[in-house]
Image (cartoon, rainbow, N blue to C red; front, side, top):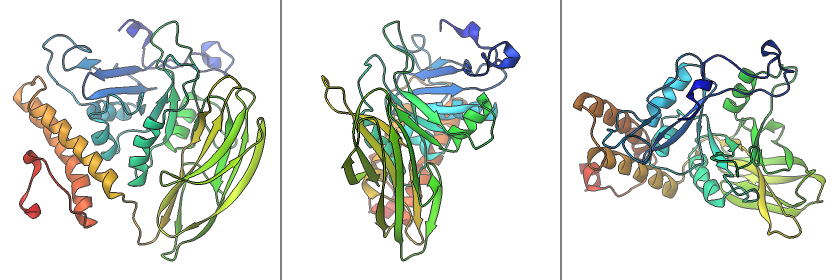
Length: 362
């Protein structure tokens, strides 16, 4: 906690009001951490610093420190103070990510570069993000360096958030664009992507018969040469084509017969390096009437993570005083039931751990 003195809960450095030119804005937030439950980035919030900054013992907190707050509770505090909630270096550490997303308390998930300048967007991060999209949780992708030392370059991977036309560039406007999922993440290539005129982060509705939609894209890169663009539909590559290294555009007509999300993935490479996933858009969600977003295997994996979180709190985690532990357990139970009840509504028969078994499964 080396720079807590930089936080004042009000200043955006670089604004004209602060003596800057308004082109580059910096706002100090906090990354609150728990070594098993996970980390959470609380960005742009106002007022008092959200504390405690860490909990639950080493190696994030003090030896013997109890689990006294959940990252989902930190998330609510951040939103209550006008901030943006990001799950950093998604999905690790992953134990509470599932509950936070099911409770719809996260504004974005972060694709992270860390200290590898040409690491690419991690397929492991993408595959876990896809689980939530497949079940209808529209949470946008953002990029972050997670800079932990002088060998890590800020801006290796970046978030681009599109502000509405004629909207002044302010930190609040940028946060609102992220909340509205108007984002893509990139190691260099820039992109525009829409489905039947709906931009990234939008939803559209088709009748029960489905239909054909046009996925339109434009890409350009002044840094790493591009190689391919791919259309990702419900986590699977539906279309793929090679592109010019510096700029290209095109579209695909795609038949949709069930609810689906569509996103654009851009691959690129330097001559002396392997091909990498260099950019990825937040999707457009196409809802087909009578066909809810639901992927049984992914939903079960998410539910199992929430079960594991409750088991950790009940057994291994150092316990806070009884009332505080009961309050946290109740919040996690609400996340569990929200997803579990939906699985029953979808008619999905599923296994349980011993602690969450119930008569309907016997």
